[in-house]
Amino acid sequence: MSVPERPLLFLDIDGTLLPFGPTDTRPASPPPANPLLAGLDPTHGARLLALPCDLMWATTWMHEANEILSPALGLPRLPVVDFPDSLDQDLLHWKTRTLARTAATRPFIWLDDEITALDRTWVSRHHPTQALLHPVDPSRGLTPADFTILAEWLRATNPA
Image (cartoon, rainbow, N blue to C red; front, side, top):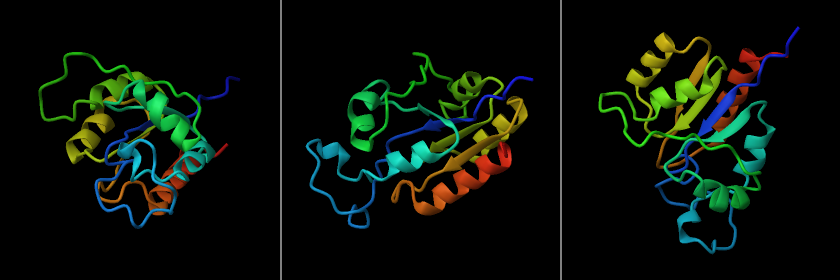
């Protein structure tokens, strides 16, 4: 009997790990050397690694995510979704089809601040297994409540 592959977690950066809102609600730490990282919560790395899934960058940062964000979060180098040069020009988010293709037959989570109901509907009709398209409030970024939702979905999806 083969062991099922772990779910994938596609991780966006801007608006998800780097919120657009004020940073005074995040843990206090020295100002980062890179001003783009001012809103980064360094505790997110350990929380993401604790989830029973395989992490993958799904961001316009592409491979720079491994150079800049992974070290800041204490994450290893992660695989990066390779988005095509020409993007779909319809009402779906430009990442939707590529993420579903990348996941293939694996369950997946997509964390992003731009997910819409149309993306959820499309994935539910075209992806062969479970998927959680979880929108993150871009003014706050990932919160403890988001991590609770992710953990509960992963537990229900893969109880082993």
